[in-house]
Length: 112
Image 1 (spheres, one colour):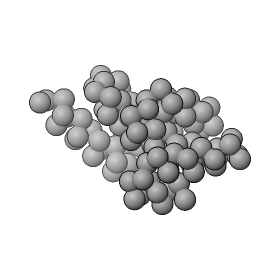
Image 2 (cartoon, one colour):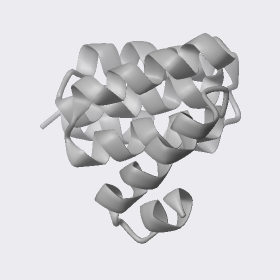
Image 3 (cartoon, one colour):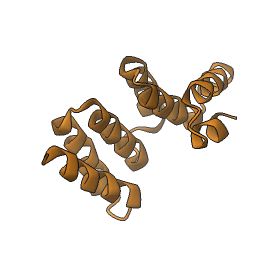
């Protein structure tokens, strides 16, 4: 339900379902990633950081997670940190399409 509501841009409901999922299983990396992304979309960056920390504890520096963290900082307007995480994601997995898209987006918004 979290993924479905996120896809439908119902971020409040997605957050609720992802939060319930991590409460049931604290080792559910997918639920932590969804929860962090939902918090990002809701602009609740303090809670997003907590979810990303839990995700790092579970998965280490996974390229997809680094990409998501970079996007989180892009949403906050912290382009320096966004670049740092996106570059780390790109170095870890140069073929990850989402990273390339986010780097392009970063370059576009940072130049305006």
